[in-house]
Length: 101
Image 1 (cartoon, helix red, strand yellow):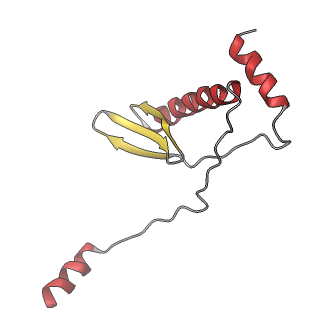
Image 2 (cartoon, rainbow, N blue to C red):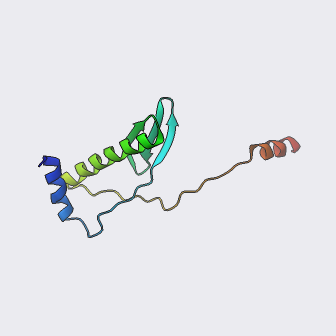
Image 3 (cartoon, rainbow, N blue to C red):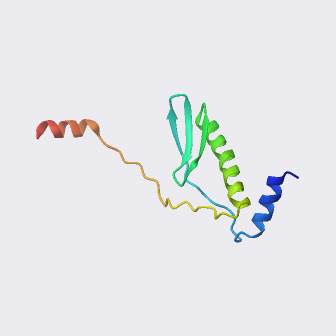
């Protein structure tokens, strides 16, 4: 068994019953593909040519990062984002409004 796997299994014994954590992941288009990241875990970044590839890369890095935290007995951060909303802005209406003023 790999040392990281052993550390992870030992750490999981001491976690609360619910061992599943959820994190908000944002995926943006960059100059050379897509980038996936979580605002709560700024050190974890995934990259890929497409959205799915960036997400998969992010998830692999996330698991490595959390395994490292557990191996060092550092608390795993909670995601404090409770909701994600999209704000629409009608640029044409704003332009008309500013021209009338």
